[in-house]
Length: 229
Image (tube, rainbow, N blue to C red; front, side):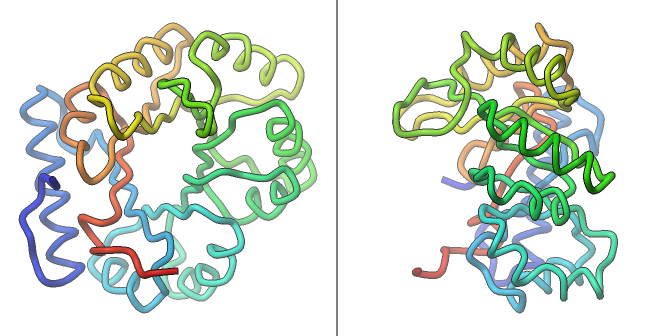
């Protein structure tokens, strides 16, 4: 269940989502505006995204480099202050394009990706903000660093590739309560001196805010059901 009220259009749903996030911040004793809403626009065409841009929103999330490359350059010509987040898996052969296109990458999860990103950043002189994806549920089918390996992975990224990270990201298992996973991510981040927590989606973002999220990734509550592939 979404924590926002059902409405008929993207600006209204966006406003309702932001209202719910601000309410969750107040309930958690946090300052208003601490949490960034990443509006997940993956699979939606530019025409569906533009109403959210026109309403003033600027942080958007995409799953695939190629899809984002196809639709965001034109939108950015009209809205140059957009902050684009990569929230889906990244292949090493797409690292150059990802560094050129995205401002924040949430899904660094293996040494090959870290090496490719470091090389692309050096070549382009551009440094997107980075998050490590953590597989908090240790699900074999899901990307992410196992919790027990996070400390070592962060150290190797820093020492071998010169990368710095803003925080950690997780996607809890769909059949488990999200709160323990959010709490684990917070513990791992604190232990490594990281402030960013990318966690919480349409169904559980209020709980994520209560447990320290700095970025929540919300798609269906804003844009509605995803188009069929």
